[in-house]
Length: 439
Image (cartoon, helix red, strand yellow):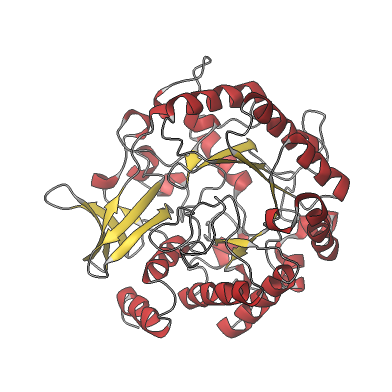
């Protein structure tokens, strides 16, 4: 393939059942996008909602390497529509890569577009600055710092603990830059609260609740780094659970409560449920046994893959299978030095994992791997996984859901190309839009 355009068009032709919007979205997520200065935001003083760096960097360079995009943040997400491919409305999380063949820039009329290999391929919409971002907490902190929203305002993302206790080369997941992201924001002098105060979270949510008059925000996610000992005297279930308890007491029924945490013993999982959490995300990261050990050494050491999977299954007794939604990082299956060498092998392995969980009524979801350069796998694999892997995964994912009679998981909004808002992979874009929906 002589150009990225030729690669993309070849895959759209070979996999016509995968929405064309998803092909572009996966390519942008895996490889990033460059921004012309005309497409950058004015941070929190402008009309565009800026990128919040809500947990990971999701960039292909460190802040000092991003140029003006490090000073004037790009938008949190972009929407693709129209163009020569007649794209339906597609929400894409922004991952900055100054070297990407994709570029967002304004034309001579000031209209933003997405350009690939120098040709305009779609119109670009950017998220407007939400009214609740214009109001500060009493202590001067911004709502964006304490309770940013993503997925076009659908999800409030509460990273309560900004670092991970799996620390260092022998424990950190090899694709994860949560600890580096913390360090780079602190080094740049940006506000980046390590442990968020419960009262501050409630104050930020009160501002969102007051000014989100359209009720666009529908769910919140509680998450952060793994806790292997204690934080503020609390273990993982009680640390994250206390936020859910406070939120549900102050805003009963206002949002769907979700928590992303380790696969914990059933008694700990029950505490999440008792605190008011409705959906549990015990991420299994990568399916293959050897790759789990090599790429998730801390999780292997403290819990172990087999026990991790057992705990995921056990958690369905507490939350019900529909409300247990583990994530995996799509693409690390093919990461050097230990990953699969062919797309066929990688898809077979990932599908084996999907069938394992879906046969128990559990519907995993996935995040498209961004090879952040400060991680071991990002350094070794700056191009990420082949685009063909990501397209075939969408095909295999939907086929496996159909095989086990499952529908889109709750807490993710509407499925279907042109309707989905989940922005860090295309799994929701690729599902049928006429299926029953639990938003």
